[in-house]
Amino acid sequence: MIPPAAAPDFLTRAGWGNARIEPLAGDASFRRYFRVIEPSRRAVLMDAPPPHEDPRPFIGIARHLCALGFAAPAILAEDLDHGLVLLEDFGDARMREMVDAGDVDEAATYTATVALLAELHRHPPANVPPYSRKEMHREAGLLTEWHCPAVGLTVDADGYHVAWDTVFDRIDDVPSVTVLRDYHAENIMLRDGLEGHARLGLLDFQDALVGHPAYDLVSMLQDARRDVPEDIETQMLVEYQRLAQPGTAFLDSYAILGAQRNAKIIGIFTRLWQRDGKPRYLDFLPRVWGYLERDLAHPALAEVAAWFDANIPADKRGGYLKDPA
Image 1: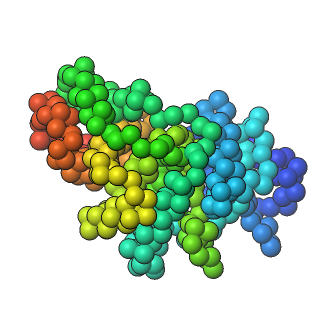
Image 2 (image 1 turned 90 degrees about the horizontal axis):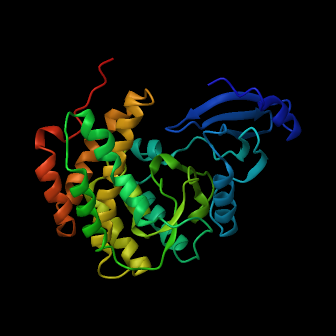
């Protein structure tokens, strides 16, 4: 977590030349974050190094969300050639830790996140690509591409695609919305002294697409990084349906998109271990497999569930992978 070489000049041009730079966080991508500190103010420096990362989608969605009245970080300065962006600092009160510590009410906090989604979904979507069926297939295929070989399985990849194609036909046709795609408790900051949507500081939305409104609910309520109680998930689904009135097939779509997302995550987390040398993501696999098993039990997933039963035996599920190191 050494600051990029271009950071001092960038900060000087942005009017932050006397600031101290401290490591803040890295993530599953090549992006890194630093806190930029002066006596009376502070900001966050995003390092999104080209050619691996492009900060322009993040900047575009941040400005879109801010224009709609949501709390995305203000863009204070940018240097696209070096992949540097100076952002508003939302502080340290992340939803995940605040809920886990009991510092905020779990149900009330999740209710606020659901209300934010319902409000976002009332607005026309951002100018970003669609969450196409081709992309959904590609993501679901990460499980057969990465995880199945890692557990010693040779599986029917063509049958997997066919099963998903049948199931995707059951996703209900509702108006498309902005899908943030990584909307969960580690990407929401709880901002002091604010209420309503302004209290929820949104992060990590650079991969946003236009898609189904159930997807971000799945991301929040089947969170790969923390256990969301099943009763909370049920309550929040009822609350979203009360606010948004999405139609009678919504829960079918929620289960389908839940299974698709969880299959994708299993594949990605296996890849992060094998390809990128990040074994800590294996610790999340038992939780994600648990969500996936629940989704596969839904009648709308019958063909995909049958494929799993035929190709992945019970003793190869559940995320038992361990890094040999």
